[in-house]
Image (spheres, rainbow, N blue to C red):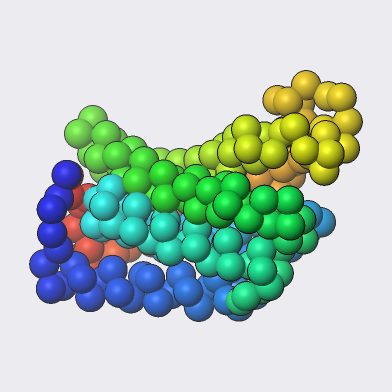
Length: 204
């Protein structure tokens, strides 16, 4: 894995982190629908994973995860579910909000690298966008069930259903819209930025 960043790469990482913070603390990053939200914060994370590799994806993913956790306490926004989880167990709420986002950014970098190695450069950006949105949902919901599945709050939401059925029903159309939007936006941005030579491929 890449051990360090060049000055230009550090500048890009700083810009993407700043963009992520702006999106996280304004309505630009979230479209709240019920207890969940369609999030566009995966976009700068995916771009970082494309331009800076798994390390860049992990760093921006960690920033995303921290802002998500802060919203559990009403800092920079509010999360109805996050507030409830924080009240149940603050430490587990931090893990559930932080770790999935870090892993999402890290793994997205490897997805992009894999598609580049398969000589699919046109598809690589779209694959990275899709994986960011898909992994964000899957890892977030998996951590929710794993860490809070035995709580009264989540048991009431599951209502006796199979866990897979519950997750599909719970994320519903939100996840589908999010995946389509992020896949398209990241794919187009990655292609545009690469043509303009503003970013290169992901580094291992």
